[in-house]
Length: 385
Image (cartoon, rainbow, N blue to C red):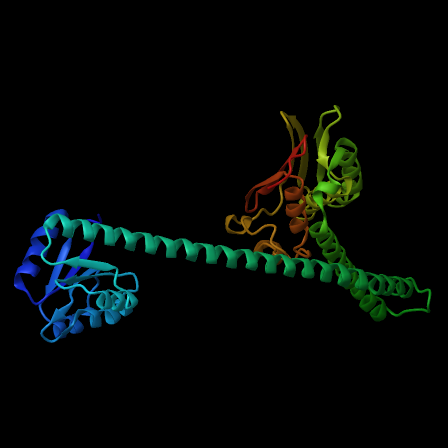
């Protein structure tokens, strides 16, 4: 029984209306009574009813003619016909028009209560069935949308790979020609010409960096991690990266330091992937740290995982920007304001590779005080969900 259900009683007999009210209201039902066909038509559209008890015949109309407007107002309403002379023809007509059942006059309070409770249970089940059907429909739509999104992502990845590969060759050729001109191998240059070519060379270098990042990002998206994950020694990779960035650090008088155990650390990843992850993070730390600052790389062996932290004393990241790190082409506002060049793709590559290797990345930063990226990698590979 629904204690909040509203029952409509349409009957021209006062005794039936009063009897229904006395039988149902003590059980928590709200009961509204109507004495005529005309009044019922006027009120049906304005009210909300869960179940209707309708007299089969009234002086001004037939009860079965109320079924259509009731069901139009609420397709789940349960309609019960009250009759003293049920016939097969009447039953067939009423059921065809949407009646749930009949209750014969005279009826007891128990019979009425049982009929109402059964009707409301049918309504509940019908509403629940529709809800489940709607959920299944939404789930099917979501699956189709996800499939379409996956298809679009695959197209995007393939497009990025194609464009990056196609652009790399002509841009690289253009760089070589410009360097030839800058070196004076194709004739003497005046100062203005040399300055213009130097500016073009800088722009071409930025373009090549963007192409390389697009290529790396596309390759990362296309990776089948189950095929690529393997045991990789981390120590030699970190030593190579520190050696690679030592000159960049010295050029800015930055103290670049590595703390790492001499024990061999094996993680589940790929060598190329690890170089992209930590190469991007160390390179960024140096790029965004002013002259005379510090970049500290700390590698720790913990139970079941390896923690690699890259800390700097650079320009930092605003709190509202931290959650956006890893979005393609996103760059923090202060980085743009400082005029530091970048594509906004490096951390996208890092984020996706870390996720591919079932790792995690935490970021802690304060504006003007520096940033720490901490990468946790599994010693034993776990297939990501």
